[in-house]
Image 1 (cartoon, rainbow, N blue to C red):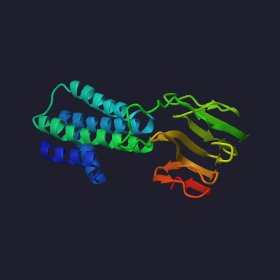
Image 2: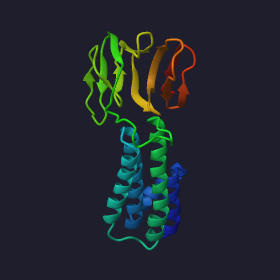
Image 3: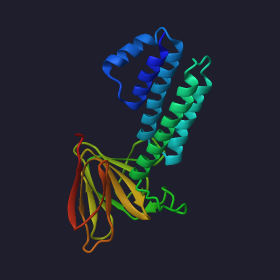
Image 4: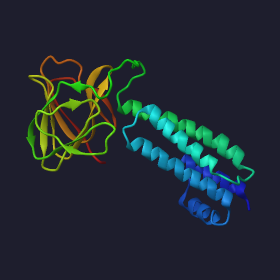
Length: 243
């Protein structure tokens, strides 16, 4: 079998440039070639590891270590590598893995609002912040950092860095930042409370939030999947759609 040809197709699968025709041809080939099937399974494992790393709010080092550990575990279980696997798996896959770990780090660093100047002495993400939950309408859910459990949030509850807030359909709430500044979280919105250079910021994953700030107000940050902005003015609305 011409495994060199399929080696190139597998590389295209990793790069994301594979065509539907090539993918169908590769799937037919791996039913007969064990070594290529092992490499194909490796690619699927990589994709799954990346997706898991980006879908959970784990720290940058954790995400990178998670991908690297799964790569190592998968490699140790490979019993009969084909002649080209040494070059492809160790060389190509290691380079791709390094790029993945870097991408995970850059992405999570952006989402968490951690600039390159962040210090190791930064406050832990479990720190309580002076934000009051008020004007609840309907159901507001909260998920604490390192937890997969959603809980109903009550008015006057404690708020912590790393908390993720979700206002259910037909619901809304107000997060009071101080006596005159507030952030309204409208229905079907999801907001993560973060810290940026020692200052509180919010990451709006989807939905809409409206800010009403005291004038003049200190630095106020809202991040979205499209970028990070510093609030200018006293009233504004930020919306993130699914499109």
